[in-house]
Image 1 (cartoon, helix red, strand yellow):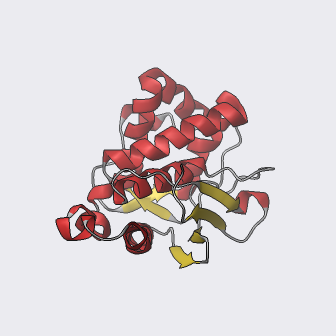
Image 2 (cartoon, rainbow, N blue to C red):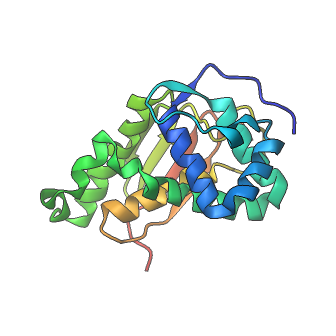
Length: 210
């Protein structure tokens, strides 16, 4: 796999560490090591990023990781694994970050479902905007919420025929499930920088699944 030039845009080490642990949850240690080798990131098999909030994990490394996953398992297999990793990443610790911490409080739990999503989804976006170089925003339309990633670490430096930021879709899906107390919402990536769009955009239907 061709190395992706470093971007100078960074995730905090802690988020990268959580994602790599989630990858191991889904694939096992040997599977992770194979993906890291293909992504030219073999050094991470010996030592994970530190458990701190320093912005030191380059977007190019994050993108290489999920590009390697797709290359190794094919578009369909890579997609399914990345969706599972996204869900596991949220489960493993993102819900404990500042802007989302209050979503576990009783006052939040008794809010109407629509209000929970209207408040919680922008809070999720703020976690990434405040802690990393991934600027994210949320807008409300008649039938959807639109979650936009303006600088995307998942597909940085990659080119794809189809939208490919599946870990982000899985993370948003699991975040909504947690915010809503177990309700599932359809999340679809409608625009993707890897395809040639200006941003990566995820459309969340307001009506829950089922």
